[in-house]
Structures are given as C-alpha cells and as structure tokens.
Length: 357
Image (cartoon, one colour):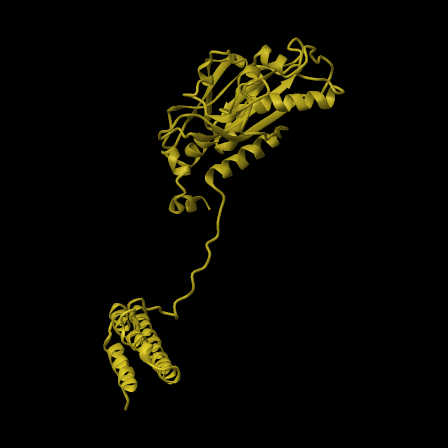
C-alpha cells in the first residue's frame, strides 16, 4: 500500500468518526483544505520533472477524487440520520383523516347589508353605489355643510394625497350621503332631457320620484368599542312632489319591525339638527321584550331634505320635497345578534365569525 492509499484510508476513517456536520467539515479541512494533505502534495510537485509531474499528478487526483467521494457519502449518511431523528420526533399518523377546507360564510355585517337592501327593495327603493374617495363638494358643500363645519377638519375626516378640480383635498367619504346627490343628478339627467343639475337653472318639470338607498363603507377618525375608523352606513332618500315626514315614519317603522322581526317595537322621532335636513330627527327604538326591553336605542338620523340640498340636486325645492335618513348597519348588526363590541367585526377571528354561518 503506497502513501496515497494510506492517505485515502485515513480520510475515510476521519470522516467516519465525524458525528456532526461541523466535525465533518473540520475533517475535510485536514485533507482538502487550503493547508490540507492533498494541497501539500500538490505543492511538492514543483521540484519534479515534467514526466514525473504527469504521473504524480494523476495519482494525486485519483486520491483526491476518492477522498471527495468518501466525504459526499458521509455527508449524505449524516443527513439521512438527521432526517430519521426528525421523523421519529415528528411522527405522522397516515391513518388519520385529511384536513378538509372549511366552508366559508358571509360576514355578519354583509348579512345585515343584504337584509337592508331586500327590505327596502320591497318598498320600491333602488340601491346606489359610488366612489369612496369623494370630492369636498359632494361630501360637504352639496349637503349644506358650511365651510367651517367640524366634519371638514382633518381631526374628524381622512384626506388622501390628491386634489379635486377646485384645488381642495379629496376626503375619504365620511358618510354615504354624497350618493344621494350623485343619484339625483343621474336621475335628473335621465328624465330632464340632458338637463345639467349643476347649472343655475333648476328642473321643475314632471319626472318619477327618486327613491334610493346607498349602503357602503365610510371613514372617520374615531375608534373605540362602538366606533371604527372604517365602518358602514346606509343612506336613504325619497324625493317627490308630495313626500312628507309622515311617509318617513311609515317607511322606517316598517323597516325596523321587518328587520328585527318584531311588531312589538316602538319608534321615537326625537328633534335634532343636521345641516342637510330641516326639520331633523334622531330615530330611537325600544324593544318591549328581551334583554334590551325598556331601553331607548338610537339607530338613525333623519329629516325632511333641506331646500338647499334639493337645489344642489338640480331640483326646484318649490316643487320637490322629500325625506332622508342615515343609519349604521354595524350598529344594527350588534343589536340583532347581541354583539357588544364593534371591533369584533373587524378582528377576523374565525371563532367569532363562524357563529353566523
């Protein structure tokens, strides 16, 4: 056995004694490293003749290949051993049934929105949807909010990095009320033969009544157990030649009793103030039985549409009159299902959401 055979056997023995990848790398350095045995043999060839270098170099390469093969074999053996240890520690019972994908369901607020739309559709209301990034005019000015109204403050309303044609910042809509104006404009254009609702002229001709609800997401700087920076709102509007506050009471009373599936429900219209309605009223409900019996609970704001808002719709307030209301589907969902913290709707906790499937 020559010295190269002894070298290869020594490398195999050293590799076999390595029990960890780190030990194996240390053993590799002794034979294949920059100062290893093979490198030293290669350096010693400098003093040999050309013919001797060919013969010696070939023999050293054979030994090097044998050592590298032994190293690869030992690396694989250590990896296999580590895998076996891991498999034993993480035993898998293949006889267990597989995990099935659970069946999803609608979010409780989505269920409420669908319910609201269905009830008002049965009363002849359309459903309108529109942009969540609005202009100042549709969000405030068209709704009779004065320039110094607190709702225009950045402490109360979110604004995005952009401006409208009039140079004002674009707010995330703080309510779905802008859809009342947008829907009325489209309605007037459709039945007013190209009439421009933003012109100084007002439409006073005959046209079908405007009866619409506008559910959707809204945004305000507010967050606690009963408020969220993003929440849902549903506006309602009925405009015609002879629509009174009495119609509002009948429509909303019927809605509440249908929504909560209870005729044993009392409504109270409490005088209030909103810039876009006059007169205005908060709507409270009182259950006569159940855990909430006897308590007055506020569920909506309402009132006769202010003449300035009717005018901003492009309609003549001397001929057209009507009512509007705004309610929070989130709050209605809390009352219907007995949820006491609004934040549960937005936490994404499957344990909570699966109760409504």
